[in-house]
Length: 221
Image (tube, rainbow, N blue to C red; front, top):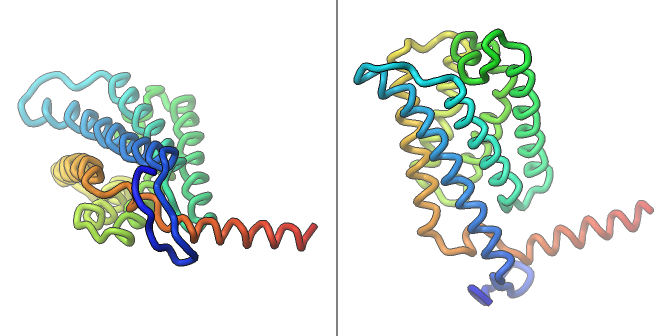
């Protein structure tokens, strides 16, 4: 037993070593994803502010790849009572991953980040992952009411949607990118001050839902 026992809706439950490992993987993957976003933002914004050469396209794509993989791990290991919502986030992530490969193949630059920046229409490829990211921030705010989650829930669609629709001046995009990167990193690191049980939820509810699904499957068989 790592934490507990706790009184759940349908009985008592504990946090065991497997649960603890899943939570640590979830939180760590969020930190890596946030660090990748911060690194990409820094590579673009610092030369623009201080002068210097623009970053190589491959370095931005590497940061994007790290973000995609790490965020995919986050989506895999997040605990959500509503299985359809969890599955929907997985589908959105997969759509973004497939779309990104399509952009890499179809764009003249063969660079995901450069193509999406130069022609916002290319956001239609990887953009689904940002919908999933917005969904994750919504879940986090709904569960924990943390300010940074609400800020990120608004920033992600405003920045990506504003860029896609050509609504944002370059300076505004740069400021929002910096705010997104710093807020995401703060959000991810601050997850570690929560008890492990917070990211698991009531395990008796998960057990009840699983039992109900098994019973329905038997009735349909």
